[in-house]
Length: 402
Image (tube, helix red, strand yellow):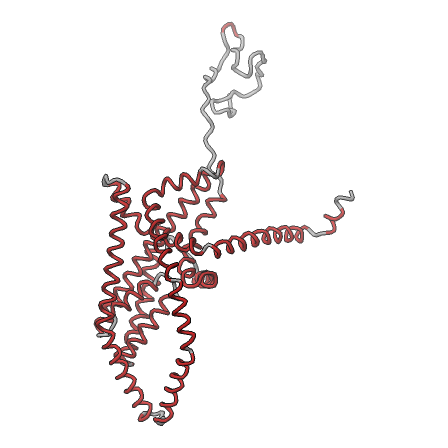
């Protein structure tokens, strides 16, 4: 009786809440230490995460080449070479257009600045030239004051260039072996889970299907978005339209925030190069195209894999950005989608197998020879048959014998 006294002093609801709090604290501690390990291993974790995304994007090509009869090693090499050719070609296009059009952009920005200055002096604001000159001098002094910080940042960026190069090499190696031996690597991982391997296998396959669908759909949507905006910028005669289109393409991988950032830069470049009217036209086209993407392309292409509320996406982006910066924001949404799809498969038990079929022959109904009950007809051998008991069917259920 004494052992029950403390339990009786605590209401059942409070006891349940306390148990849940203890569980949540333990889970929080595990997640915290796991995040600390990932933060320490960012040099390895980030290339591996990006390699998984690239593998999900490139695997359909490798799988098609395998199904056509090509050996896995050759199919993987062809896939990697095609991907490298696309990246190098895009980089060359962006660099060539930037080197050709950047001087023209500087001249157009200077002309736009002079026209804005004239409007500020002769327009409704009636500012004095001395005031405008003072504002320009303040901006120049601010830049000069930050010169030391900018120089330090450049030196720091030069110091980490080797780490970036090493990360790229690691990313390429991981992508290559995932494309070539992904199924064997997954089978090797499953062997370490023992009895729960079927659950882990189902969760992993659901996560991989979600990741593949998300990455391929996002690339398709981003390509459409970048192509349309590139055509609009080129039609307006905006310099650097190719780099801006590529920037919009890559920014589309970060939902909501990415397109806001890239759209702002493209609008400012249009404003500096072509003036206020063209900037407003481009901004209107960008808003309309973004709405069509959100309400048509995203639900049709990506909606089946990622059905998150915009608030959930913003929170996930914020958490990823705080933990790992821009790279964390880029991979936060697919990671959340993978976890969301994999957890139900881990919780659900596999369906029960059907019982093995019985090999014994069901007994025939009716008395045996001489009116004696047939052995095993109404029960085990040696049992007397109950005349009032209903007969049994093959499925074991009683039937009416009237």
